Image (cartoon, rainbow, N blue to C red; front, side, top):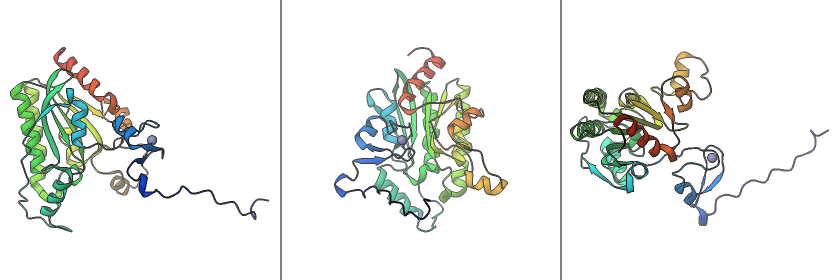
Length: 281
Ligand SMILES: [Zn+2]
């Protein structure tokens, strides 16, 4: 009869000591404790379970460009807060704070360099900058990047990581969807390839415009990709959503993505795709 026997409490893991803080990271998926250096060496992918941690825009470019070299464009563009928007705090304050913590003026880096020997343009979105949201600056930078690709007759890759359009810019953020899509149509007319890489998370107006318009749409494993979030959908249709709904693998199965490619293989995959579209470098 076990019910009256008091079970020994399971030993609890000791709280993190200050000394080791920042050196170790717990995997969000398998709970393994990973040495931060090992994790960084593996491009922020858990070696045990393959979980992909979020990666900042600059590390993304380092991962993709040959010799970690690139030229940046439009880094000085800054939102002018046309609506003088205030929610819990002024939008202007949010911008300054995001700018101070990321070293960027807005949520994307636009760059040119070589990938696997192919000259190319790459835009990498920065999720830490107000959730990678797309306002006038992101829209303008991405549009210019596409136009630059047309001018230089090179392919373009856009790596998305975004909660969608930036609500603090209202309709101004929404028109970016059309503006970028129109630029991509011109890129297509110029018969130049566009590869869209969707990372965790890619949602809202970014999914609804350029992230899904690639000649190839490639997801990172486990990335949340969708328009409205799963909670909103569940509440609207009043049904339980299937397991893995809106994750890359699910979207691949349902024909919304062309491939799911782990981060360490992403560069080779893109180089291969460029060679396929353009011939060897
Ligand atoms: Zn893990």
